[in-house]
Amino acid sequence: MDSAPSKIAVLPGSYDPITIGHFEIVKKAAPLFDKVIIAIGVNSQKKNLFSLEQRLEWLERAFADMPNVEINQFKGLTANFCQEVGASHIVRGLRNASDFDYERIISQLNFTLGKGLETVFFISEPQYSHISSTIVREIIRGGGDVSPFVPEAIQDDLTNKMDKSL
Image (tube, rainbow, N blue to C red):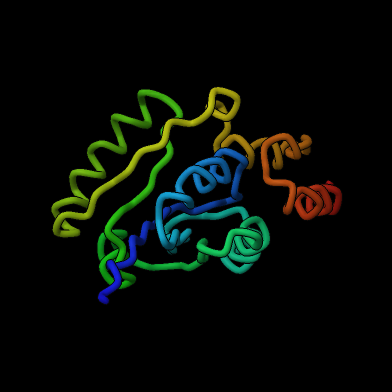
């Protein structure tokens, strides 16, 4: 008896750092796919606050108890990475109408470039809709407490990094 092909989804992003909003989207997507690949897009032009290695470690720790979630990285186009790993879907979270307008355009490009690669959108829960990595980075730079905005698995690391930088 032939088994059905695996349904693989990719959640691309910089995760600089991962937020509880990201975590929530992965929890929603994981039951719908055989494998969910959280993939850090490596862009040499982008100035990240945290190293690639640190971000990968945090993702591994945050999703350690989710067996169908895999952590990876890629360079280049998301559509090409999806083809390399056999993904049929991209998963994106939407916090507001601006996110939708931007992500809709990107999804149409990925559909063409990825030869039918579909994007699945999840609406953020209202209590997370104001949280972004950009905001969390600003709180970190300002010496504020980011624990309400990041997964529990990385809160101590971020608190320790902030204490050392002050």
